[in-house]
Each structure stands twice: as structure tokens, then as C-alpha cells.
Image 1 (cartoon, rainbow, N blue to C red):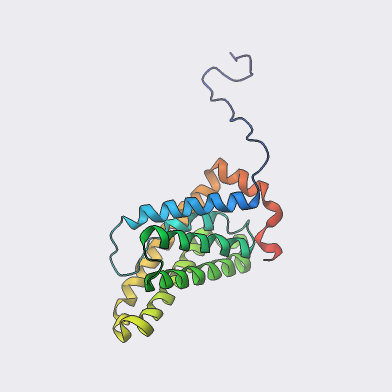
Image 2: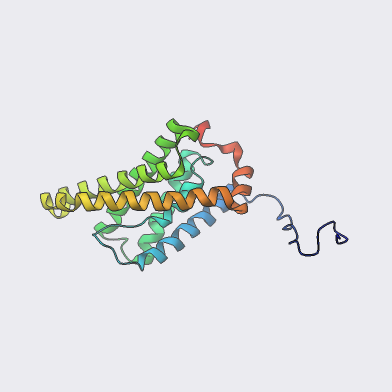
Length: 199
């Protein structure tokens, strides 16, 4: 038995068309807002070691890593870091500089891995590489400017936590990229600015 619309009575209706795709600027702003929201939630989680973050704010970057060009990804990353600094009150502190350096290093490595590895590398691998890059940069800055050589003591647990966080966030990004209708629509609408076509 079917209803007048051709669907079975218990079936959910197809979502209505949401019209034309938003502009790229609107999409970047939306993704930046999502990243800042995730960062705000993450800020409430106690840090096992200084400067460590799980990296949930990188979810928008990861799900779009194969769609956006490099400049769009860096713009999104900068918006995320600035938003974090404003909300957390660290914009005028060394914490912001550490976050900025770690984020830029992470994005650069993730783009490089995505470009060279293509579909052979999963989002888990891309995320883990980015997390390690961020952690290495932040530990190095800590050695140079804050705690001196003592910072190398926290490097092993910091890197181990980075791998765990990278795998976790990458796995979640992989799930969203495969199962989310919203992500599927966005990646389809912006397929003309594929990462592989340059930055």
C-alpha cells in the first residue's frame, strides 16, 4: 500500500530542496562558525598536558580537505584560530601564537598528505598527520620560548595523545563524510573547486 505521493505510509518524506547552493563566502563563514562552536565545547574539557587539544574544531577542515582549495582551507583555519582566541581570551597571549603556529602547520601537512596520497589515504591518516605536525611545532616552540629543554620531557605523551586524538577526529570526519547528507550535498555543489586543481 502506498500513499498518494508514492511512498509507503511509514516512510519518511524526502527532504525538500533547499534551493541553490550558498556562496563560497557564506559556506566558509558557516564552517568557521561550526569550528568555533566545536572549539568552545572542547575548551571545557580538561587538558592532560599544556596546549593539548583533541581537535574537534578541525572537523570542518577534514570533511572539506578534498573539496576546497588550499587558500580556502587556510582561510577557514585562520577564522577558527581567531575565533578561538576571542572566545577564550587568549588573543593577546603566547597561547594564541602557539595555536596559530600549530594550526598552520597542521593544515599545511594535511593538504600535502591529501594531495600526494589522494584517495589512498583516509581522513584518519590525514588527521593523524596533521595532529602530529601541530604537536611537534608546539613542543618546539615551547622549547625555544617558554620552558626550554625541559619541554622535551612532555614530548612523548604529547605525541601519543596527538595520535589518539588524530585517529579519533579522523574517524569521526570519515563517518560524517560518508553518512551526512549535508556534507554530501556540499561536496557535490563545490566539486568545481577540488583541492587537486590548485590553490
